[in-house]
Length: 99
Image (cartoon, rainbow, N blue to C red):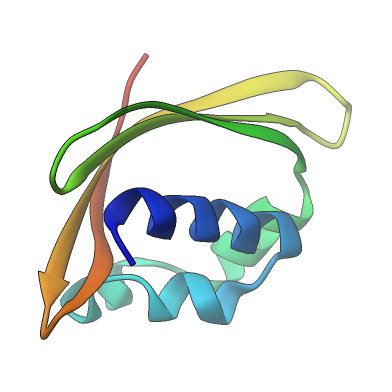
């Protein structure tokens, strides 16, 4: 799976609130930085609408994830995600929010 495919599958995991998959596809050395409870809360409290891939490079995916909060206010999560490969498998390593 290449980084863009992994990004798309992680978006789907947010839509389905599949926290296990999100943590499993995070770089093992970075997993402790993420709260299972916070991931699940954000995933379940958002009405995910669509994913737009803006640009991809070898290990970077820039994307916009469109969603609505509980009050149905629209938001766009715009991120530059960095992926890292270990033992032939790609993982989400880090992300920077773009404003």
